[in-house]
Each structure stands twice: as C-alpha cells, then as structure tokens.
Amino acid sequence: MKKNVLLLIADDQRFDTIHALGNKEIQTPNLDKLVARGVSFTNAFIPGGTSGAVCMPSRAMINTSQFLTSWENCGETIPETQALLGETLKNEGYETWGIGKWHNGTESYARSFSNGEDIFFGGMWDHWNVPVNHFDPTGRYDQLKTFTQDPFSSNKTMQLPAEHIAIGKHSTDLFADRIIEAIQSHTSEQPFFIYGGFLAPHDPRTMPDAFKEMYNPEELSLPENFLPEHPFPFDIRGERDETLEAYPREPQKICQHLADYYAMISHIDARIGDILDSLEEQGILDETLIIFTGDNGLSIGQHGLMGKQNLYDCSIRVPLILSGPALPKNRLCDERCLLVDIMPTILDYLSIPIPKTIYGESLLPVISGEKKGRDQLFLMFTTKIRGLVTESFKYLEYRTKDGHYSQLFDRKKDPFEKVNLCHESGYESTVDSLKDQLYMLAKEHGDLEFIQGKVFWNHKEKQND
Image (cartoon, rainbow, N blue to C red):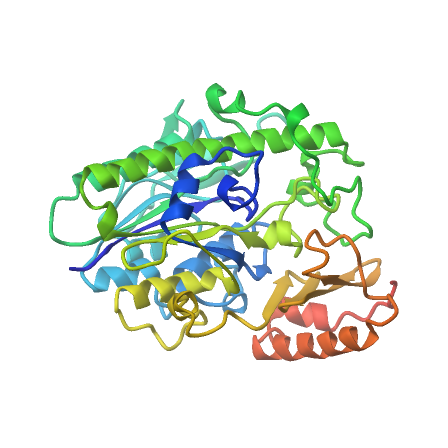
C-alpha cells in the first residue's frame, strides 16, 4: 500500500528554533515529538536566493528539485518542462492537495494539485486578513482583487489572484484547519499528498494572545553573534526586511523581535500537534511520511541584520525533519543537504522513479549510512554574494558599490560565524584553495552564464578588505 505524504513548510523559520534540537528558550512540544519520531537533518541549507523575496526561489527549488540558476524570473513561474513534486505524485495516482501559501504562480499550482482550499498566491500578508482562493478545477485562478500596498503611506495598489478575504482568522489557524479537514475527508484507498504552506513566522509578527504571553523578551538571550551594525556595507540597507528595526540595532528591541518570532513558531507548533492528532484519529499516522521544513532562515540581530538577504547560517540553514514508516526514530544527522533534496527523497521513499533532469539527490542513502552528504554547497545571493560551504569552512565573496569583501569562517570552531579568518596568518592557502573551488562551482552551476552571475563575476571594483 502506498504511503501518504504530508509536507509542511514554515515561512522564515530557521534551523535553531526547535527545543529538542537545542534551543531551550523556545517551546515546541509537538515539533519535539516529530523529532523523536524521525530523522532531523541539522545541516540542511538553502543555497541562497535570486530575489529579496528569498522564499519564492526557495519554494520553487522544493517543488522542482532544480537549482537557483534554473529561472531568470526567480521561480515566480515554473516552466512546463520542469516536473513538479505534486504533478509527479498526481500522475502516480495520488490525490494531491495544495493548502496555504503558493509562491510560484497559478499555472504550476494547477499542474500540481487535484484538490485544495484557502490557497494564497503571494509572498506575505496581514495574517488576520489573508486573500485566498477556493480550489478551481479549471486551474484558471483568474479572479483578481485590488489591494492598497501600504494604506498608511501610499495610494499605490496591487492586484492578487483572490476570491475572498479570510477576515479575522489567523493564517496559521486558517491553513491548519484546512489541512485537518483534508485529512478527515480522506476515505478512499487512493493515497494523498498534502502540501501545507504556512505564512508564519514571517512578519508582520502577530499572533493570538495566548502565544504572545508565552515569551517575556527580558528573559530571552541576545543572539551570540548580535551586532549593532554589519561589519561592512553590502548594499542591503534598503531591503524591506532591514527596515524592520532602526540602526544601530538595540538589544532590547532585538529581544522583543525574538519574543514575537518565537511566539509565532509556538503557534505553528500547537497546530502541528492538532494535525498529528488528526492523522492518529484517522488511523493513518503510521502510514504517512511527514516532512517539516522552513523555506529559509532569518537574521534577527545576528551580524547586525534583520532579514534573509545574506548567506550567514541564520538565514540559509533550516529545520528538516522526516518522519515515517521504516525511517529511524530520534536520529540526528549532521550531513550537509539542500532543500532541493526533498523531492527526490520523497520519490525514492515511495519507489517512484526520480527524474534524471533534477538537481537534488535522495537522502535515503544518507540516512541509511550508505553515502555521505554533499561535499560542497555552492551559495549565491542575487548579484551581491557568492560562497561555498565545506565540512570545515564557509567562504564568502561580496561585490558591492563600496568595494569587494571576503569572509572565511571555521564552521567547527566558530559556529556563530563571528571571526573572519581571511587575513589571519596561516589561512592563506585555505583561502586560495576555496577561491578556486568557488569559481569551479560557479562554472558547474551555470552561474557564469546566469544573468545575475554575469554581474557578479564581471564586477571590477577594487579589493577593499
């Protein structure tokens, strides 16, 4: 009998936000249960982003297992030539449900799902007034609603595919309730795939009072790598995320941001508990592969930053938990992997042929110990940053209007990425080697021909380290 699949994606939830995985200040009892029931990858990454809206290409990578350089439009739409996870499972006889946030266009959604509800086509929104769609079997989703982008400062409007606004119900509750309804409505022998895309904990950071009251900002620790300002400029001060708090960053305000961030995650956690309960009540918890992850991380005061438009671990490392029949329980795996590996892992688990055209690799051989994780990870952010991750080091190069900068971090001795070793005695050969490896990885990933990569690699400003 084919197993069901439940894929849950949080928005902006970084790797260090689960109690059972080491953060003793956050309360996540249901994610802790999921950790105990499965395998947690503690070195799961996204490779960066091609847009300030990092979640758009990230979710495209999850759903296609293609690399960042596959789309000139940042994954806003997906070409028909690229197989989608939901589409592949639908073709294999699965009832496919798409619920919540879908950030990669209406056409790819229609290809992926045979059912769904409360579908949000967009990036972020007011959690208490989400513009959503009912499922449209024709796949057109051509009804548009006009919204004022920022009613407090401008009359500028935008249009989104939406049929109605879910007024007064928090997005986390809205989407969790629909996921539970999908589980409860499933009565056939046909297996299901449910894609649940949450909007939280993305800002605006609002949540029901019960969760807000769980955290006192005065009792939370300031991030180990907190800085009032980033050590050097790299042209992101104007990014929307970076305007969420004034410069220089103040410890008290950062802790308030953390309290709100943790509260939103605890809200998601509570509703994941309800989702797990519904699977158990239907008698299918032990027949379902469950995957929980985040589309990207987030800086909240780390390195003087407030967003995810960078390549520090706080912004590109995410939780990744797999729980299901025949998978080990309570296993931590520190092998490096990428979110593009989710699609081939699911297909491999279900004994469905993996398309040869995808970038990702199944994690099942890594879980079983047959092979190691990825040796190197190529990182990129728009035209500004390129980098790579190895077992021991992270190396980053920046191209900015103010000059060129580089960073080298020892991943084992300096997990918070506080000490730049680029100009320290004894690391010259390491830097030279990593520079060469970075260029080769860029070439292998098509970055030298990619529109953003051309800008980066042809940037000629003087070294300013």
